[in-house]
Length: 240
Image (cartoon, rainbow, N blue to C red; front, side, top):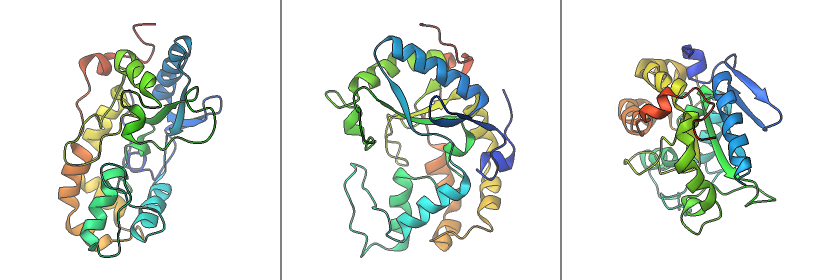
């Protein structure tokens, strides 16, 4: 499996990803093969896996961050409810953003190994909200959630935000291709992230830079450990 460069790790390059027009997403090549295999297997079981988000370059992540910091997008609490930001100090705003949106340069979506998924059959029109309630028992995507629990690891995927670790809020829709993302996480060192942010026009930069080591530990490193099965998979699945 490939080792990503600092530019690829931080979303400053896209030389490691390819467009999957038939699947409506952009992914790293090994991840793409695994995702297409997972998608085909799910289809045979009546689940129409679709991508709500995949590769995201640095500038896109920066725009999301700045929009949230400057009030152009809503801030949400850990239950997905809108926060009143008017009286929030900058440090509180930064951590509210980080619950749901990564710091530019630190998003796993930069790697091309991450896909936010939903079931198109359960949502024939519009876009999913991507909230935990949709994947909970009785939720819109509960069948997809059960299918992923049973089969995702056989294709090399795991859910890095499977539970609350005090950093990123749980994201049951977020899949990561372990054979590539495991090494990417180890390679994205604190100094690589700091370098990527040096010249960025980042809202709240003073707070971010003063707390960068804590942000790195709490919101980048604090994720689930992929299982040996997911790490050993090569994307073709062992159940289908």
